[in-house]
Image 1 (cartoon, helix red, strand yellow):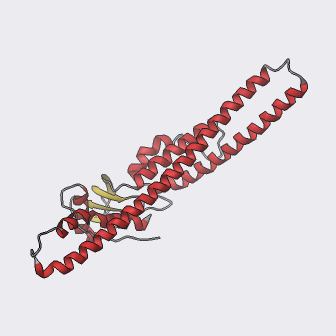
Image 2 (tube, helix red, strand yellow; image 1 turned 180 degrees about the vertical axis):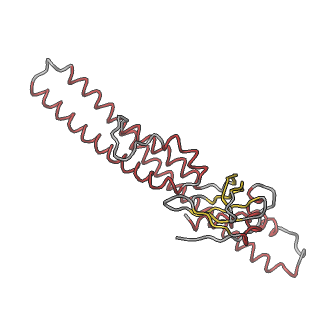
Image 3 (cartoon, rainbow, N blue to C red; image 1 turned 30 degrees about the vertical axis):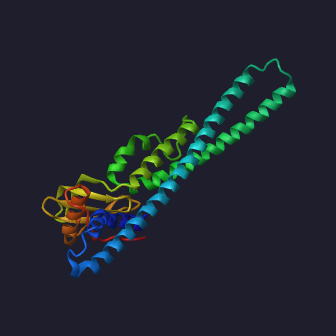
Length: 262
C-alpha cells in the first residue's frame, strides 16, 4: 500500500510530460534527448501505477464478491432456521421419528449459524483494531456503520446476516477511500503548540501531508493509536505544489515528497 501511494504521487505528472513529448521537432533541440528520456521514465511509472491500481481493484472486487456470497449464505441460513422452527411448532401431529429428524436438521442449522456468527465476530474484531488507522475524514464517514458493531464481549440480538452486511459496508467504503488522493481541511496542532486549520493531502491510508496558511508543513502516518503528525517545514513548498496540482490549480508535474515504507 505504501509503495503504491508513492507511485500515485509520481503519476500526477503524466499528462504534462505526455504533452511535452509531443512538441514539434526542432523545438528546444539541445534538451530533446534528456526530456524524451524523462518523459519515458515518467510514462513507465504512470503505466506501472495503473497496473497496481488495476490489481488492487481486482483484489477488492474479489473480496467484495466473497463477502457478498457469505452474506447471502447467512440470509438463507437465517430464513431456513426460521422456517424450520415454525415447522417444529406446527409439527404436533407428525410422528416421533419425523420430529427427531427435523430437530436434527435444526441443530445442524444452528451450528452453521453459530459458525457464521463467529466469522462475523472475527471480522468485527479486525475492524476495531484497524479503525484508528483510517484518516479522520474516512472515520467520520464510517462512524454510523462502525457504531453498529457490538462492543467486545457484549451479547447482541443482531443476526449474523446483519452483522455481515455491516462489515461489508465498512470494508467497501474503506477500500474505495484507499484508492483516492483527497485534499481536506482539518485542524492540526502545529509546532508552536497552537491548533490551526490546515489543508491535508491524504495518499490513500499510508501517508498524508499538511500545510497551514502560514506555510507550516508536516507529515502524517497511521499507527494503531491513530495518526501521528510530525512538523517538517522544509517540505512546505513541495506540499503546496502537490496540493495545488490535486486541486487543479497547477498543471500536472513531478513532486518529490518523503515516504516511509513498512
